[in-house]
Image 1 (tube, helix red, strand yellow):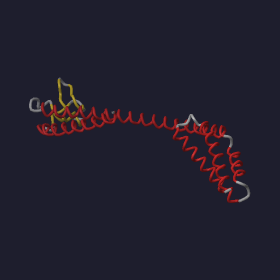
Image 2 (tube, one colour; image 1 turned 120 degrees about the vertical axis):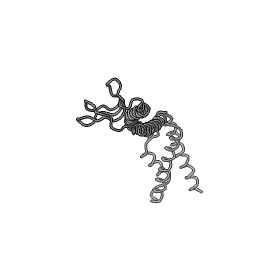
Image 3 (cartoon, rainbow, N blue to C red; image 1 turned 180 degrees about the vertical axis):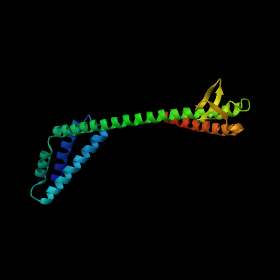
Image 4 (tube, rainbow, N blue to C red; image 1 turned 45 degrees about the horizontal axis):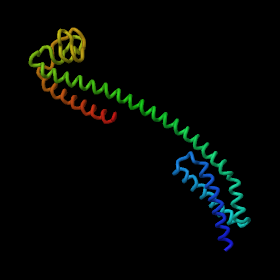
Length: 206
């Protein structure tokens, strides 16, 4: 009977201590406060049971010794808030650095993807245009040789080559009418790939 009265008294003392501590932690979200209180309560009860097992002191004496070592509720709260602030600052810096690096990396990839997509569209339309123009301007469209090697690839308009330029003077066109099937197939394939990449970029940006 005496043991039950002592246990009830112990519980009241612990509850009073934890209630005061709970109020001192009012700047912390409720769910986090409850977790902190539960953890401290568990530690106190565990320590009481260990000391009780040694059988050298009464429960109340054991509890007061534990609470004294733990510190006043306001001191414990101040230490918890201080550690939490340091942890928050550390996590904030880590999150900020990670966020910045990730955004720069994403922007860089987006920049490269945009250039790559532009090239795909350019050559896609160029190849299709070459296929369409070849029957009308056979000597001005295609792959050109040169005495020095590669003369160019594309469409010649007023001595200017739209496409990939090479060495001058340009020689004769090499591919002939094979430019038509090559241009249609390659051009449509490049345009298809460019559309897929563009759709992926829009999804990432959204």
